[in-house]
Length: 477
Ligand code: SAH
Image (cartoon, rainbow, N blue to C red; front, side, top):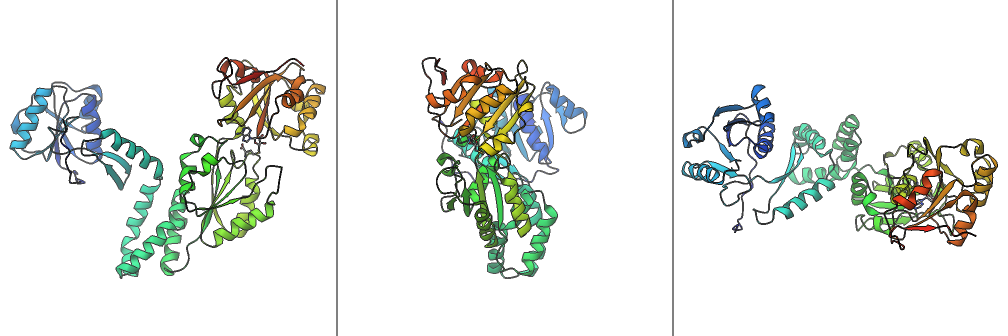
């Protein structure tokens, strides 16, 4: 039984200080790695070193002086770590350490330890340590994982920048309350985003600027974010962080509720739908909204289904932002062609069948007319057709007329990656009929090519029919 204890958190400065480690196996190796990173002088007691530790010894990074543990070895150490698999030995080390008032950690033995090593989120120089006092290590681990996801990797760089500016900020704003207010605005403003975007020089300039006018409104920005195909698990960590810091979210109709649910609760949401049906917001109006909110100092997330640069008009939006002098960043998403293929079991470039994949759109007769049918009808390639719904008959006729075999497999993936996903497989000559008889709805992605047939064998996701695979085979007409 582990007694629940209230621990006193400490961050120890081990630079140049000796730490005695008893044991030299895998567990000891992990602990020693952390100790060395913290600058400790590590002295190992063990009958033999594992190969990794031996290499460290040979390169002079650790000392290995004794084969057996004796209590006197503790005298020159600041901290002691017992990491052997010999329970009796670990106990002797712990008891000897207690007698000499040395802090000791016995790996995986809270009762014998006088200090514990927390789970760490490392954004050095910013470090977060998590502990449950030994009462619920799994919970501590879960918290660590959550924080790991929530905190941008660039936080360490930001901490370094703040360190460089601390003195100057203190002398510019000697009043504590004023300084707090300034830091608050600084950290919610453009500087962390600029650091995140790898623009350190611009971030430094922004600090200079804000310090000259400490009460001026912060600079807004737009994050053009890919929301992926619908399943929330397919968001990137950066997309999730963007959603959680958004003041305003302008999203397409294609973005799933599951994804929107992850956004900051008090973010303002504006749907700027463009599903092809119903009222939609014109592109100019979208640009106007983006610029207006960013100019008001807000963090604006422009959230698009899939990837913002794949049939998403993300490029046009960036052009408008650049012209207006608004800061922006782009966070990619998993595009429908990639996601639907994965979720339907269609390996896009299976080497037995295809050497290339083409992403094509055919959303109206005009766009269908302007396609290079000769190239699209080539063998040994996979076509992934976006927004093809209304043009299936044209697609079939043109591809066959330009030489693609009538028997070429096709797959329709409706609501790919979502709980209501459907996959319908057939042949090119049946395409319009397949879509009609199965009442295929938007959003749907069409694959043309040999790999489409593999969905019947490799499909794995979705409510299964008899086989348990979400495939509805084409009925003969
Ligand atoms: N930027 C998006 C594409 C926008 S165009 C992306 O990268 O995915 C909209 C088209 O994408 C839809 O008409 C449909 O063909 C396809 N699409 C998007 N999400 C889909 C999904 N979950 N399942 C099937 N098709 C999808």
